[in-house]
Length: 125
Image 1 (cartoon, rainbow, N blue to C red):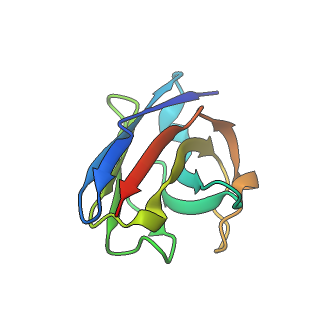
Image 2: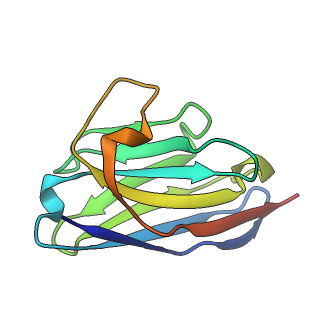
């Protein structure tokens, strides 16, 4: 199993950029699909992005396509989420997760078995 730990959140202005990092402990990191989800106050958890075990395949939620980019480094047990052109509606707690399922969208959170504690991203208008 793996235990994700997110970092890199913060406050940014509209149009700005942030890069989130996720460090995952465990020797089986490269066997897991890694994903990012987010949850805003009063809203359901929303799929943001995912990346296959070796990094060759990625997919994104409709609201972040062309603005966000997910990547991973299996030599370091790290996953990254580069967020560009940020909007106030991107404000949420962002969660990193590890799992084995790759279902067609809408991507369910049940595809993921291990979750981090989350990191807050706030985009000011």
